[in-house]
Image 1 (spheres, each protein chain N blue to C red):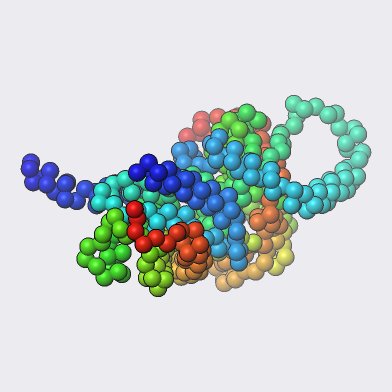
Image 2: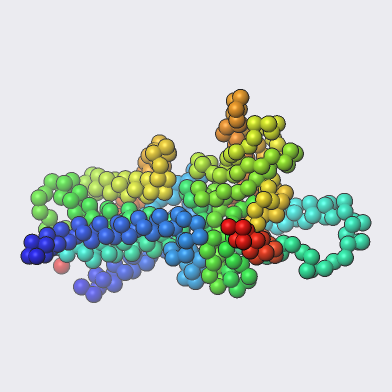
Length: 269
Length: 172
């Protein structure tokens, strides 16, 4: 017994060091598992508030590009509307038939240089934001809501090793999975594309709509390069349509059917 | 004693704020963000009782982690260099025992400060990027990133030590 006490006394700093290291390691592992990073995240009121304040100072420097983006998006939407004028007029506008509800949010903390990038936005539970909602910008997809507090939320960026997004080739309906390898923030990788698919450099890749996160057909990017052998495609590089280093205002998508779909899927298990 | 504690808490707060509000947004050459906050660990006074130091370093790393959503990566790296600071100081300064009360980092020669800061910074950055990627496949990327980021952290740390600390012959 005395020897144990002596041992602890002699190595007390080393033991404290070990305990702290193990604790830090556990926090890292826990934060890496999606849906469990509730404890250490930047969505709490102190960090969120600080980022919000600092963001409101620097916001003016990006107003010009932000306005340009809005104008371009408005033009695109007007053109799209013009193609469908008759349908819109005859279509009865009924909000209960709307499948996805969009909420505006602002990225107050952007990250794109790390292996696992997580963003912070200034909307939270108070604004109806919950886990597993898709986040898009005017140019393409950004990520998925991870943790929420009353005023803020964190977004699991598509530039994260735990982010797997269902993607589809726009011209041929072949489905693949989008995952990032961590090297360049401008490109991401597309996996599991069938060999039968006839892909070319420059083909557009959009969201597949096979999950409840994103509706079908949202822009992801274009094929930059790929290798192919007789069995499969390898190393398909996608040039992201979105500039992930310059994100301002984003839209959060709430799928109204999500509860019904989840209930159905749980029944099958 | 209280004056020292006050100074340390002030330094803690300022370094965390500088790190999360300014340095984490630099993105020099797309990915280099210097980690100046470990300056706190270099400048923390040497004490015989090291438990407080380890706890404070852990809290420092954890504060950075909360702001940058990285779990416990910075906490682990900060605790590690805090633990190995004393042995490395003894080794580089080539003294078996240091005078804890009289020792001040900025009173050492420039070359010695450079070596001490470089060793601790490299260890810290290697742990950070190693834990972030956590795969042998990306070993090249880990080494590349830790070396390039270390260079900028070392330059910033040395400049801060030379500019913002007073040289004193004694501590009284």
